[in-house]
Amino acid sequence: MVIIEDTVKIEDTVKIEDTVKIEETVKIEEKIQVILRQTDLTEEVARAKLTQHNYDHMKVIREYMGIAEKKAPACVKSVNQEIYRQFREKLGGVSNEITK
Image (cartoon, rainbow, N blue to C red; front, side, top):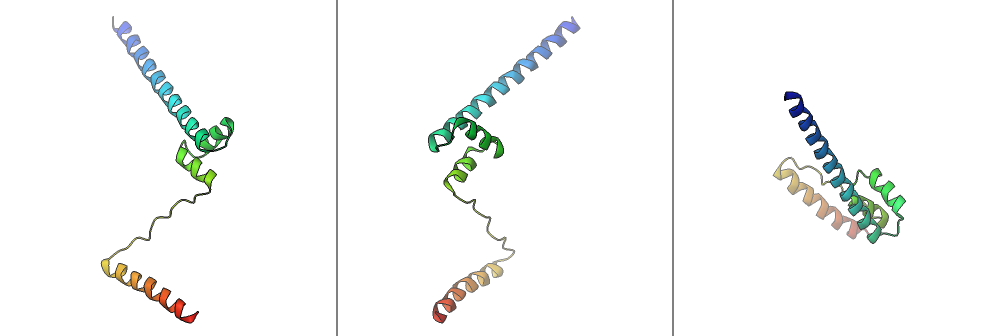
């Protein structure tokens, strides 16, 4: 009986893995359809771009439209650093306008 229970457990895990693979395939197909609706790419090119961008459909669409990724703002260590950074930005812009 122990052997029968082990085989049942193995079969259950295989079924769960198959279900996960099917769900992932469905999600990938949905992402490809989104890319095809938003761009003029063919299905093969969309699939290749999707794998290239680690299955992030938004990155594929942004690349197609030429939208650059936003860079993270500089890390501020203290409140005083932020205050003086803003002063430099404002006053630097003023001095550039005066010299023109």
